[in-house]
Image: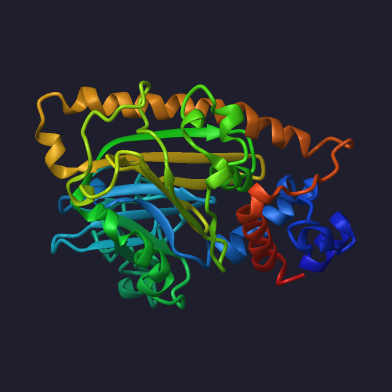
Length: 381
């Protein structure tokens, strides 16, 4: 179905209420969050074009370390080769399309489990049994299809579009705002993976929604944030950042580590958040960071991965694991508070009773994000 047909079928081609100035704007119609056709457009026009965060560099720290991932049904591999370089390529055998790796681990080469074709850590074909007799067979043309790979301060990014500009260009504004966090000096303490029964945009929007924190999260962290004084730094390309006051993310609102060494000049109430479209969102306090990576799985299912990072020197503390677990468990509790709400919104999108409501001034960042995604998905319609 063409883009114009999808718009016509869902909303008669009229997004004017969402496009209106914030004081007059309304949220999007339900089909934007349920339509398989819209989901496919978002895959093609956003996720297959932009730089996507896929994890931490220390997850493939040694030569031979690899991770096999699926991104919107596209299987990929991220691996560190024998020279220490990290590469990314499609996890699709160039013979019959079988995935040549699964999970994560350490290997010297990738072997297709169907016919035994072998690929090295750069994705180059190095073995293909019984193919010498195949007329015109050229091993050099059968490497696993490469993807662009980039690193930003310890975070791994890939891009399916080989013609896309460099990561440094894509992330330049984010770098200017968040370089001071020095994530390259941190290490991964824990990684929490869960799935939510909602569209990916609801997850992204919820993570940026400070309108709800003093209601839904009042008993965890919401009571320590004054949303009346909240400053929204809205970016042109769907991004958002804010620097504000909030207590450390622990049950008693007290830090177990103190300031990160390079944030020693910040008060204990220092907090920050920043979204890099389409799938990377930093959250943190003065003593830790817990970025989140968002992966669409279907029109009504999303995976969210939470990475807790702390200064590398903290890992030497004898009770580090116990302390870090306190932060991890607290954040899991917060995410569980969100779960029922985003799942409920998804259910609401299928109701014939649903009519998009007006946006609050506390949703100025969502207004920018929603309209940016409309631009990307429907070519500015």
